[in-house]
Length: 231
Image 1 (tube, rainbow, N blue to C red):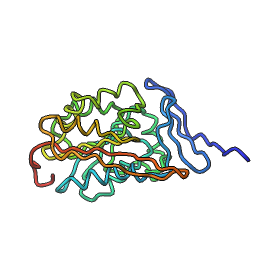
Image 2 (cartoon, one colour):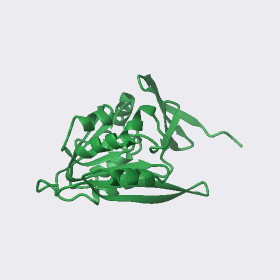
Image 3 (cartoon, rainbow, N blue to C red):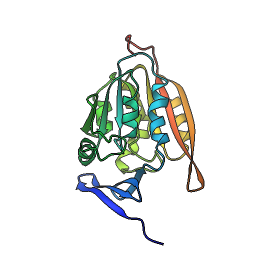
């Protein structure tokens, strides 16, 4: 048996560790600070993070914040919704933004569209500095609250961090969190926060290598009615 050929597309070290983009046997993989983050064997759940969230949003001219660029699938899927006016991605690793601009990410093979902005920032800082701004906030910065890519992200999933993110939403806006494992405890945590409604814990089964994996998305709505005609 021959080993699969590995083609390294990029490797950069920085303040938040090393990020590696590589292609193994036709599959694109992203490794962040030594932790396997994702590949593109099955991108249904990354895309579902956007579609399931936007299905819960109303109106036009929607503003979407994505925490974590990954391989570009979530941002690209959000942009495919004609109601979305713009998508901003908060990404810790500047190299990923460069690779996206160069068309190296499979979700964004044509580079960065006009309605997409990628900023090098911690999504926790972005939501703290933009209260009442977003119609949807999609968090995919880890493999879930129980499998962190960066330990500093733990605060995002604590009550105070969740409350800050919810406060960044417009009235009626939707927060969504992706996880590689079920996380009913996160749904319970969100449901216990004041001003939160319509909390849902959705399982997304995926078959890989003859095995079933249950990924999950938790969504929660900020209380109140949309404050403008668009959302």
